Figure 1 (cartoon, helix red, strand yellow):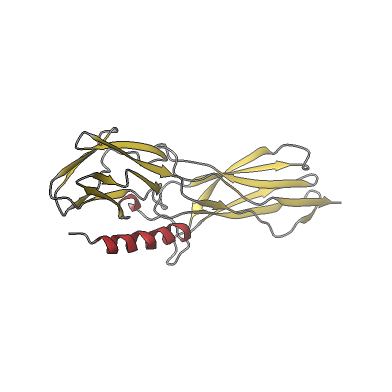
Figure 2: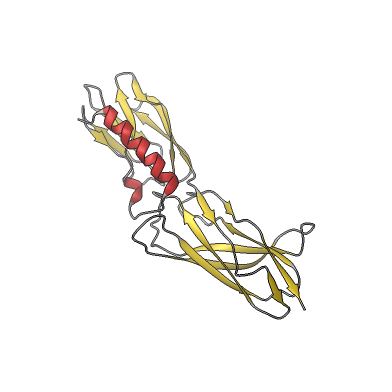
Length: 229
């Protein structure tokens, strides 16, 4: 039997962690965001969760209930028990409708998790013909699949001569994951440039897994490089 106050406390704690830390393997199954099955139907009817934080169904009724998603996953939850419907589910951003006992209509709305990308360099001033190393970090909110130690994620480096011109892409760089023993974890990226004139740079992170969207689109602050003689 799952006690409601304890579940609510767990959800509150996980909500804080989701804003502060970064992904872990198999995280889609770790977060007990509850939907309660009652004699009057599921509560709430519409549950909003960040990508990767899939809910559990807690049966507070005296009868067994069946949760069936339009995407194909179906589970039965006995009285006093709980269950999680993840088999065959995309868990990506969007609306995921389901029914309880084939009648009551409900849904899980998945929203994108946070993401940050930074841009910097040793100096804003270089001599013409000199090389400069741009670098930064990519941070992704925790509990979002795929695992952080999976494929490297690309960031896009863009540039323009001044604010009157649009940014154009100059490179796509893979951010290399760092394995650390304390949070926040991060990936780092680097790019060597040799600008011929004053240039404004910015970095975009907008890659997503093939299964759908999980993260927000992120932009770094701009970084201006002045080129002297």
